[in-house]
Structures are given as C-alpha cells and as structure tokens.
Image 1 (cartoon, rainbow, N blue to C red):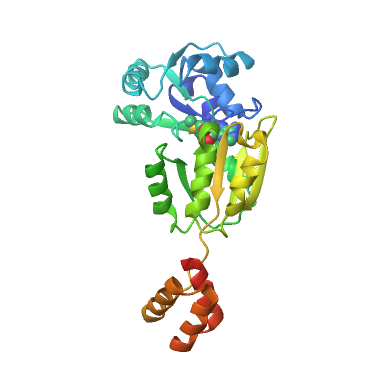
Image 2: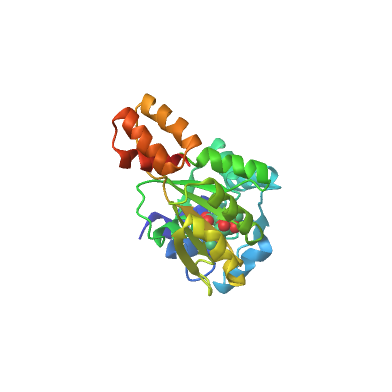
Length: 283
Ligand code: SAM
C-alpha cells in the first residue's frame, strides 16, 4: 500500500487534478484523497458538488478562488496547523494552471507544510498529446490578453520563440484570437484547434494557420465550447550574413520576391533559392 492510501498519511495539503469533462478522468489516488480529506477547498463549491456527488464524497467544502485566495489560503493554513487534511481542487483540470492554487500553496509552504501534487488531467497536455505535432519544445502561454492591442503585442513577442505555443481560449474570444494569430504569425505554421476535450463534442483539427479563420467561420459548432489552441514552432530562420540580409531586405522592400532574390543572388553570389526562401519569410 502506498503512503497516501492510509488515513494517517493523508494529513497535509493535497493538490488534486480533477476531470475537465469526462468524470471518469480521475485517478484512484485522487478519489482516495478526496474521500478521506477532512475538507476540500474548491474554486466553486457548487460546481464541485457535481463531481463529489458522482463519487459519493461527503467531505465539507469551502471556496478558494482568485478573488479570495489570500484569505482562504490563510484559513487553509489554519486547518493544516490544526492537523487536518485539506484537498484543493479547481473547476477543471490541474489547480494552479491558469487557475487558482499557487498563492494557497505558497502560503502552506511558507508555514512549513509540504504541498503534495496529485497529477491528472490538464487541457494543455491533453491537447498536445493528440495534436499530431512533433515539435521538440512547447511554451504554455495560457490566456492571451483580452484587449486587442495587448493581445497583438503578446503574439508578436511570442512569435520568435522556438517552440510550439499553447494557448487557452474561451468561445466568445476564439474568433478574434485566431484572426490575430493568423495575421501575425508565419502562414506556414500549423495550428491545432482542440475543443471540448474529453466531452461529447470533442474535436481536434490541425491546419495551416492561414486557413484557421475560414475553418472557424464554416460552422457555428466550430466556435462552441472550450478551446486549446496550439501553434507549431516558427519555420527555421535561414541564416544569411549581415550584408546579404541587408541587400535582400532592401530589394525585397522594392521588388517582387522572385526578382529581389534573383538580383540579390547576383550581388551576393548566394544561391537564388535560399534568398527566395528568406525573402518569403521577410514578407
Ligand atoms: N486548470 C485547467 C487545466 O489544467 O487545464 C485550466 C483552467 S482554465 C480556467 C480553463 C481553460 O482551460 C478553458 O478556457 C480552456 O481554454 C481550457 N479547457 C478546460 N477544459 C477544456 C476542455 N474540456 N477542452 C478544451 N479546453 C479546455
């Protein structure tokens, strides 16, 4: 029997990942901890009832969400000091991942308690696992800013990062976000639109990012539900020396791509194909 299977060992703070749709997506260990916890801190106590009732978990709950996390975190620490076992859950997936939890964990740790993570569902990892993308790295970017200017600036900042970019998005903003991603990122990058993961209408679609706005517009259902958006890594940058880059940039600004590449090849002696590829990137 593992340590956490015993009633005795459960005293402390447990960070428990919960399903994000399919109630079957919960580990045996998570159920054990929730069943034996003295109290469960929930992002939304009413929402949590759905899961807890399904598994006949009777532990009392209290709210710990982004607007009360400091006070609720202090209450949680008092409970730990009183020798209680406390489980922390959010509405879906893993606490602390675009969700409350971090401040409560830090408060518990500052008071000398170990926060025990119970791994389980998270939308980002779930989407990545079935994305079909083979990128070596990914960067979890969470939600982009809601304001258009700040959103565009953030996308521009992330553009050169050599990793697949993983975003969370809500249905009411997905169109704007995808339009901005398509406008600001290299058109040859792929996007994976993963919606309603683990739910009845789960859909995972992969396409060139330039095609995504039309895909979204093609069917009302494509804009419904909860979204993870993954954009593949930027295309490899073609490395030219500084002088060749300068010549090509000057020509590409004035001439059609093919002609710019041809002239740049004559001036620099570099292969025309390479210069053409780079000129396309500059466009
Ligand atoms: N803590 C969660 C996790 O570990 O993934 C994330 C919580 S965050 C407040 C909610 C966002 O996660 C949604 O807006 C959506 O972007 C994503 N998400 C949650 N459930 C999802 C699902 N079933 N399908 C797709 N995305 C989901």
